[in-house]
Image (cartoon, rainbow, N blue to C red; front, top):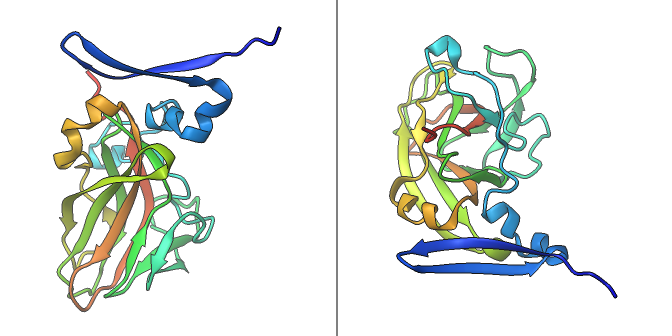
Amino acid sequence: MAQFFVRCWRLAALGLLALVVCVPAANADLLGLGNLLGGNCPTTGAQVFAPWKDFNTYYLAPNGGLEGGSNGWSLDGASVVWGNEPFYASGTHSLSLPSGSTATSPVTCIGPQQLSIRMFGSDRGGTDGGLHVRVLWYGLLNRLLGSTDYNTFASGNGWGPTSSVDSGGGFNLLLPILGSTSARVQLTPIGGGSNWRIDDLYVDPWANSD
């Protein structure tokens, strides 16, 4: 007799009620449940921003260094160009964001313990209103659950690490119920005169750990 295995997830626990989803293991990846519940989230990384007194451990988002070109990114007016952020010589490319452009990162796993994101940016000579950052949240079957507008980086500065920001925002009430979910980071320069360059998009897997 054939033996069938199932995987079960507890999606929410409210008082005495809990929602548990069980599906055949062969179908779990098709539904995206493993990624939704954080099964595919990295749990290790490096202290990339230690020179700037940030000793949290970060992992690089998929193609976060743009060394795979635009693979996984959705670019509208933005482009991958030659030239790396100057602090780590492991790459040769970065993202150029002129005024009117938008860039959306590949899907990465972000959840209750992966809420902090940070990157390297430059807008030397830029006269725009800054770089607006938001997170697009995805659930089962790659359906968009919502978005979080949470920060705008100041314009006019040379290469340096951006501030470390909490990507949860108003969405953080839902995250403890979902566990972890897939997300994309969207970058949009505000106004005219943008000279933004972005490189090395990182996620902190320990941001909210005790």
